[in-house]
Every structure is written in C-alpha cells, then in structure tokens.
Length: 587
Image 1 (cartoon, rainbow, N blue to C red):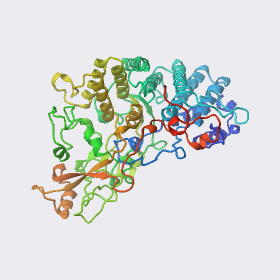
Image 2 (cartoon, rainbow, N blue to C red):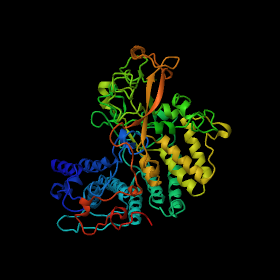
Image 3 (cartoon, one colour):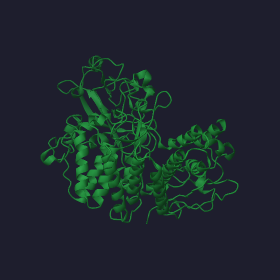
Image 4 (cartoon, helix red, strand yellow):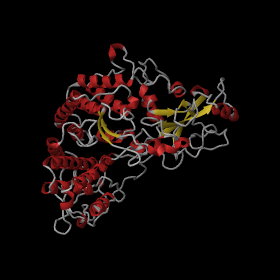
C-alpha cells in the first residue's frame, strides 16, 4: 500500500519528466497488487476523480460576473502560458487501469466498473485539454520512458473529438444506467452523467469556437441536437427535473436536479466556498471574489425583462435603477447576491443582523468605497465591489466554523442539461422546444408569467432565441464556472475585451437626501436600523489601482502550448495564432 500511495502522490503532485508527456516512476506501480485487491483498485480509480475539482468562488473570475482583471496586456504568452490542462498524468492513470485491470483477479463486474470509469475519465481529461488547445497527442496505452517514443505529434481536433466520443461510448456500455442517491456508490460516474456529458462534448464540437468559418450552420449541430435531446429525455423519464427552490439546488443534497456531485464530507473533504464568498468579518479572511455591478445589472426584473427595457413593467432609467437596484428583481437575484444593508441571518450573528458595506459603517473587513468625508479608508477597493456571493452559502456555519463547508459540489445539474438541449434545438430549427425549456427555467426561478405565460421572453427568431439562451445561462448558472467557457465557445470575447469592471459604493443619507453624519450612521447601523433606502449609491471602478482593463484578444480562443513543452519535442506543433502552424479548429 505504501508503494501505491507513493505512486499516486507522485502523479497528483505533478512530478514531470524531461519528455513531452508525463511519465511517473514506474517502479512504484505494481499492478499485481493493485488489480488483485478491490480496496487498492478503488483507491487507484478514486484518484482519477480529482480531475473534477470542487467548489471555487473564483470559478467565474475570468468573466464579467466577478471582480478582478485577470487578462492584462500579454497575460497569456507562449513562455508564460497556463499548462494546467496539459494533463498526461491523468491520462496515464486511466491508461494503466485500462491496460492492466483485466489481468487481475477482481470479479468481472468489478473490472467492468473500473474500465468504465477509466474510459470516462480519459475522455474527460482529453476534453479539458481540447477546450484549451485544440487537438493534442492521443495516447491510448501507458508509455515507457525508456522503450517508447515520447516525441508524439498532435492529433487533429477532429480526431480528438472522435476519440473522446469513442471513449464515452465504451464507458456507456459498461456503466450502470443510474446510481441511486441511497446507494453506497452515489457520487460515482453513471450512465446518466456520461450521456449528459457526451451531449455537452458534442455541443462544444458544433460551437463557433471550433467552427469559426461556419459557426451556426455546420453539420455538427444536428448530431449535437440528437444527443442532447436523448440526454434530456432520458434523464427526465427517470425523475430528474428542476427542484422548486433555486436557492436550495446545492444545499439540499441528493435532490432531483443533481446529475453528478463531487462528494464532500467534513472533516475528510471540505471546500472553501463560504470561506471565499462571505464578507471578511464573518469568515476567516476577506472574500476572494465579488459580483460586479455589470453582473448585477444583467439580472432581469420580476417580469423577466431588463430594467432598461421600455416594454417592461419595472422599466427605469439608469439613474433611478442605481438607487433601487435590489427592488422587483428576478428572485434568483436575491438568492445569489448579498448587498448593502440586506438581512443576512448567519449563525452566530445577532437577531436582525444586516450586512453593511459602507465605509465608516461596515467592518474594515467588509467595506468598499472612496467616501472622502470619512476618515477611514477602505483597503478592499481592488477586490471588493459592494456585493458578495450568497448563492450556495451555508449560513448554518458560524464564523469560527466557516471552513467546515462540506456541501457536495454540483458538477452537473438538470438545468444545464436543459440549456444545452435548448441551444442545440434552436440551432437546428426547433425554436419552439428551446423557448419551452427557457420558460420552464424562468417559471422555476419565480419570474412573473405575464401575458401568454411567456415569462418575459419575447424572442422569436433564431438569432433572438440564441441571445435569450445566452443571457439565461449567464443568470441561471452564475458562479458555477460556466461563463468564461461559454463566451469562449461562442467566440464572444468582445464582451470582455477592453472592458472595465465596477462596484457600487453605499453612503448613508438623511430623509432629505443629505449625507448622514458618520457617527449617527454608525449608531443606527449598530442596531441594524439602516435599511437599503437609507443610503445613496454610486458606481466605483474596480480595481482602484493596478491593471484596470481586460485585454482578451481573439487568439485567446485557444491557448498556446507552453514553450517549455514544445522545446522538448521535434514533432509537437504550436497553435497558429501563437507562432506555429497547427490549426486547432475543425476547419
């Protein structure tokens, strides 16, 4: 067992050899031990699951949803490229399992289960790399650093997609169709997740990212539609669906909306969600990412229309909306965003506790703004925005226990399956299907049905419905790590490029609109007497210092392979927008 764990640690810590592909110290892997012992075999396979990750407050930091300017001038370069997804260590783990498990003494059912998971995880790992780089070398067997040629050329992107789908189909023939929430292996890959993930892969294959010359009418959309339709209908027939309360999707574990979870359990496995989302005074350190004013404005009003839509019941000017942005909103807004003076019933706080963000009133760990009439100066203006993430926070955790967050990470849920299906339906002439799915999601959200039960959706043409789907994904899946990848596969970095981000400062005022003396404001805030209407609001750019504008050129649709990897091979071509000749698209 010690040798097995040493081998796994080497892989997980990312030890690299001097060649282009990752090879571990083969002397620490003894298949005759691993594949003859169910406990060791399961431990081996469990390490493949680390690829799924866990809750991350900063998952959407690269998008406009959260504060931070990750893309300054030349943020991505050939010499400084992110190689986080050049993951041949995980590929090798899967290949070892696929090659060696059959020679062991496990039961055939156990062998089939391991093979299924290994095929799926190999496909999942390749998909992660293809999204970043396009085609990469396909390696189907474990390579020996001394006997095999490790200087491999890149396969085409088309070949990689075909290989991913081939692996997923192999997994689907071996996986159990559904693992029930009461089963001991709940949280293992099953056929439902594999089918939904295959459908997602084909959505990406059809997308503009891979088909810039023919983004919306290429031949791949039909196949993507059929697979997404199949996934949606199969899951729905088995009882999957939208749960009633959007705010409890993650917090009420094992519900009908969860297609695949990553299991967390304190103290063995926890995540940093509340730790990174909460205001600093209620956590163990400052919040690491905060919602932007741009994203706050993106939420619809209760009628499903934007605040500045003249056809909306709640239509307002920009100036009026800024002073009342929390009123009459899509109910998902109040379940996702924490704003100034809002009631925030965290365990361990006094009854009626309200979260303030105003400088001079709020804790130094919570404040935001540049109010020149207050002696205190905020030190949070490069990261905070006057808003905090509320979605998925476990308010039952007291401040000392905030790092005990062990809510299962929802990697895929039924709403995403619906939105993937809606997107493929719209692009293949099934607009009515797409609209019905959007209305169902908005109905669950609590948006007013309005005339004709349209839930504020007036889109009719293919292009209008496409935009409606894009906007709905932005809201419904917020903070779940989808937005940047969505913008990339739609080739819509124009929404990020040359753009700044902003927050909203709150300053306490008297009933006549004049600024309230700070001592009076502090006294009233101490008893939680100040409500949202007792403040005036102004837009403040974030960050205040340093890089203040995103630079996201079109060449970022595919990242370069790091030069340090290219230098170790004679056959590995660089992407064409990064000085090489390899075309990462499907042409």
